[in-house]
Image 1 (cartoon, rainbow, N blue to C red):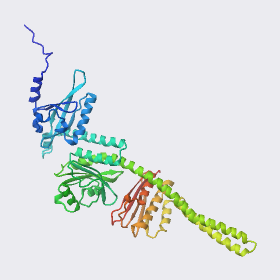
Image 2 (cartoon, rainbow, N blue to C red):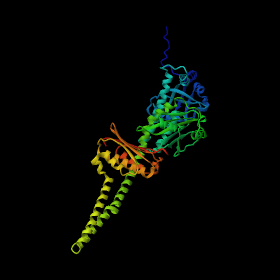
Image 3 (cartoon, one colour):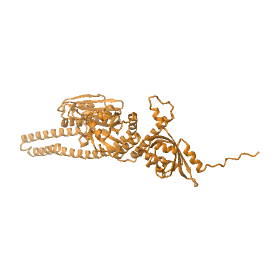
Length: 522
């Protein structure tokens, strides 16, 4: 009996492979090293609406890869060609009518005769319907693989976005570039056409520092500073510390509603960016249609992750500006000290010296007149000594050493023309901490007297763990603008030089609050 023919040498021919490819329900395509389609099966045509004639020979990112995921798609291809390893992915395909399909991909690089990967065979599963059913009123199974793959895809996309932002920060890119990148990556991750990064200015205004828009609409260009009200998501995010949304600006009233409707965005979601426990700014996304229900959660999570990059970029810019200001302030203080010595104590000492010489000459001939001259000299010396003491208090108040922070500040309060209420810890702190806190309070109260039009002020200083918290609050006009180069910027430099932070909140008509947090061991 003849043995059956062996099939160990059986090879799939092109015709068989084509039949297998076209009859499978899976999405199957082949890409060359440049990302051009070499094969696009029937399932791909049905899922996307593109015919193979429309896509073959053209890069995938010109048809089925959404613009917001094109860069990530190129990164995946580059990884595969560089390493020769497959890279399973979850991402979106764009349909011919502009829709999105969520696809889970498995891929395999195929080597040529030279052993080098020549093309990429990919097969995919369309998860869109599975994910949609998971969001229906009847909950999906806890172990639903489609939902899990969709979440993995979102996380992978977020990680790629964060990596690109982190790379910019590490390369010491300018804050402007970082903010623009954050805005662009946010739009990709949330799959929207428009996003903006806002920076809070300490009053009820915010400035656009980053902008991304694929629609060609730019109602809020970078540098725009707007007053936000209680109806705006930017204001709500700052005041509540959590994401805020408006589903239909057409149903809202006020200036913000009018601006949003003019821009063409009917729905917006905004999440705060929190740095060192304080709202630094926010990221907003906008859409002409209602944004998905999960937008707040996803945007909030992304903002939490990106806050460190924003803080790093802002800190670098602040440090550079602070260094320049400190040098200028040091030069100015030296010139001021020289002027004060020349015009004050030095003049009195010179006058005293001349008077003493005159008394010497007249001592023998007119002792009474000489005695009077010595009396005048003594008065000049006393006045000069007092001026030197005043200058010394400006350099380091002696009362700090003698009476501590509480006593020195209460003594300061007696010299001010407005009532100040003090609630200051009696605990002795490090000399540097006490001096920093004293000068922050002193300079803030000087600003209150000169500019705020206040009738009273309060000073609160206490210790919370390893942090000394300093707060100066007044009931003046508010509206202090630190961007205009006021003396308040110097307060922030002083706090940061001690390793701390300083925040100024000054809404118009509601007074100003200056809050410094200093390390207790500074």
